[in-house]
Amino acid sequence: MHKLVSVAFLVFVSWSTLAVSSPSGIPCYQSIFSFGDSFADMGNNPVVFKWYSIFDPVTRPPYGTSFFGRHTGRNGDGRLIIDFIAENLGLPYVPPNLAHNGSFRRGANFAVGAATAVDAGFFHKRGIPSATSKFLLNTSLGVQLEWFESMKPSLCRTAQECKKLFGRSLFFVGEFGVNDYHMSFQQRTVQEVRSFVPDVVATISKAIERLITMHGARSLVVPGVIPSGCSPPILTRFADASLTTISIRLQDRLSESI
Ligand SMILES: *[C@@H]1O[C@H](CO)[C@@H](O)[C@H](O)[C@H]1NC(C)=O
Ligand SMILES: *[C@@H]1O[C@H](CO)[C@@H](O)[C@H](O)[C@H]1NC(C)=O
Image (cartoon, rainbow, N blue to C red; front, side):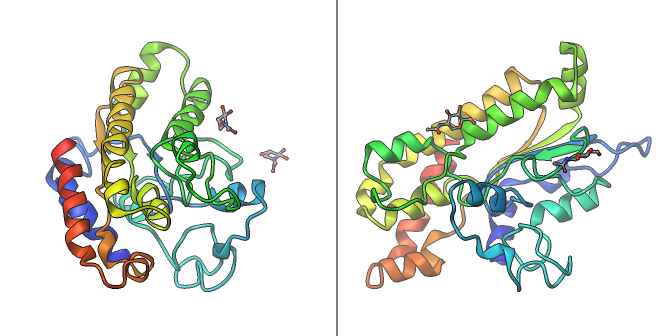
């Protein structure tokens, strides 16, 4: 799992641009704001799953056992990529907006495990997932942006103050897309799911534009999707198809469009 995330990051992040500190030694980034799904969620999913009365396996061992010594809501036994980035930038672990009772001035993490890029309505309209499934959370990228925007008045007051804060912040927009595709793959043909790619890409692009133009974001990381064809649920679903090829094509479409 962690290996896959690293690969996704390597494709999209040019590390040379992520200087740890300026020549004066002052850290380049005052805070981190993160949007995404389980690859970045540091504790929101137990809160959201409770809203929907869904059992959340991450609240049990072995989650958290190899680093924190307790479960933290992360979808892993230790730290996520974003934890290591925060550590290396000398910033605190990015507090999950739904689970943290305290200041968000040094960052906020709006990511929720199982979140999709496009809004729930997009899937509802297409009957995905089946009517009996509860697994479509209202935590899309658009919803996460709304959470960010309602938190904004507590982070900065004047337009100038906000521009300064966000101009010195590092924004993560993703990974997004894996849940849009994987959830749909359970019920739709590859052809149909492929037709969703432009909507996913457009949603991510619009969010990036909104962060830049409306909020003054200047440094953004947009991680790519994982190679879905290697993931066990997809390998099981398409046991006899050459899914690796499909995954590569999806990736190509994504990188072309972004
Ligand atoms: C949040 O923290 C404040 C003080 O830091 C405390 O008074 C309050 O009860 C806390 N709220 C929750 C929901 O834990
Ligand atoms: C989803 O969440 C957003 C933001 O919290 C809210 O405005 C919207 O009404 C919710 N939609 C549904 C269908 O619950």
